[in-house]
Length: 281
Picture 1: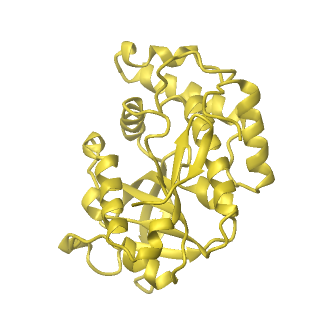
Picture 2: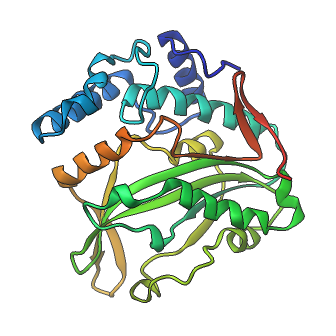
Picture 3: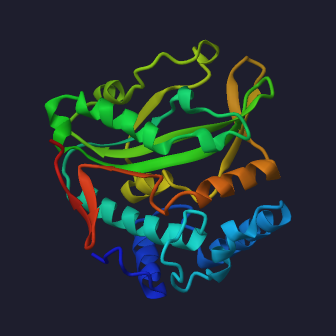
């Protein structure tokens, strides 16, 4: 495995090549990353963000890492480290013969209104998941879990907009879908206004594309999803253009994080030589 100390362009190309072979969808090309990088720099410059906070990003061009302390706001640095983690975690999962599931966890207690994304604690979100895993049946002590947090910008049917963090996890464990759902279910009662059919706290599916399931958790850009009520009263989601102010808020949130801060591993660890397995106590 290629280790996490390799910041070269050659290493990044090799990781992306393997992920393409694993049929990962929406794998950003160098050209797409460059466009995202330019747009992010323009947003920060055009919206009065103190340049001392982001001037280090001007050095980045995707040909290697020039900064000793990169942030998740660098699309090149974040993709390099996340692609490498996704590639190696997929290899670990592939060697595990147990059933594999893709779980999405939505805990409304972590929803935040526009302007308050900085108040969302990824560590708090992850600690809640780890507490549930500690209380799980014994076979979960050897479960292999890889994924992370993705941020969506949602609009409900009444027009209320809010940040909706959610976790996507790929899990190898000897359990049924029902058992996986029971283990991962948030323990707190959701806010009264969100009880009912507006969201499912945990959804679990069988994995059909392993590497793609892992990569889905840490997509490059924010999703903006608006609720639409059809003629039968069912709520569906329709994409809409996220406000510039919200994009800038998300940029600033990433500036305060390291490239792998929004990734989650359990039953695995990252060392100098890459991702390896470990059992929980």
